[in-house]
Image (cartoon, rainbow, N blue to C red):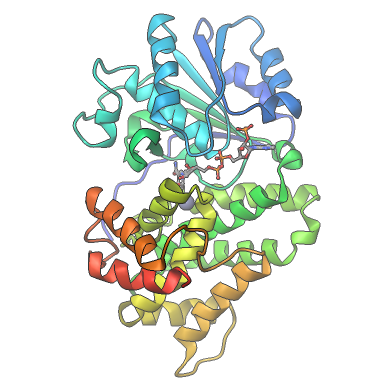
Length: 383
Ligand code: NZQ
Ligand code: ZN
């Protein structure tokens, strides 16, 4: 274990916390409020933001779509530059927060913001960002990552820089009351896979990271099993905090990461607009089977410690089946059939995307080449 760890995002958690933004956004800031398709207008969040921002000079930008696009966000970049905005307040789910991170970095750059996504421009500064989270899933509210889509070319790419990590994250579980069931389920699944990407790798004996990852997985499993209690304050608060902890950097410190499920899943979203979480459930079981030999020990550990399975020769495979059963219990599919044309064409289109994006050596051993991805897709896409 060798690592540097800091998570500088101040978390203001709990009911009624939206008004606390006035104590964390510097006075005299010119603020831009960035939001999505309008859910915040319908559930009272916008009104709370408006009243908390009384006395600030502020403007707004709406219309950030799920899987936010460069095309839309560039309009916000222009606005931030034009209006000399010096604080970005993202109010929404992962898409709005990710989009705001892109805007923050691109506004401090003279060229095309997409240069950031393809590594042509290294971010050295950004407009400060704060977040009011309305959908617990991605962990974007307190991490330094963002995933942006170029609609024109169907490219969905991640970038990471500490400059865009939110200064604060307001997490009021009450805002989840208007979330459709589908999005609540997406939150459970996305957070689950985030833990797996940092845990289901090799045996390294890092007790804190493994133990905490297992605690989060057990919690998420319980929240899934108690889905009928989703209207309770406790259920909401627990999902919100679990999803945050799943991807705030802690369990990933000093251990190997995988992220192949995410990279392949992103292509399903880019090609067929599959919800992010659902793309992961499609890819992960097949990927675990493909990488069975190298992940066997960790699968066995997860089987015992998360699912309470007994030791046996088939424990690792039983663990994969338990993961699938968990997704199915939430009504989430683990195979994809939403393509047009033939299965071979569908597999090939994902492979082409992966190749174009340089995703040719994925996973904790960089062992998932295009050939391995093809085998994974062959299992994950139905005939
Ligand atoms: O746009 P609005 O009107 O707000 O509606 C949204 C959207 O339609 C709605 N919604 C959000 N909060 C709501 C609500 N509806 C009612 N009540 C509320 N309180 O939910 C829909 C989906 O929102 P979105 O932000 O797209 O979902 P999510 O949080 O799952 O974010 C997904 C995006 O995050 C990226 C994904 O790739 C995807 O683009 N990710 C970001 C990560 C990161 N930054 O660390 C990691 C993740 O692995 C992921 O890749
Ligand atoms: Zn994710």
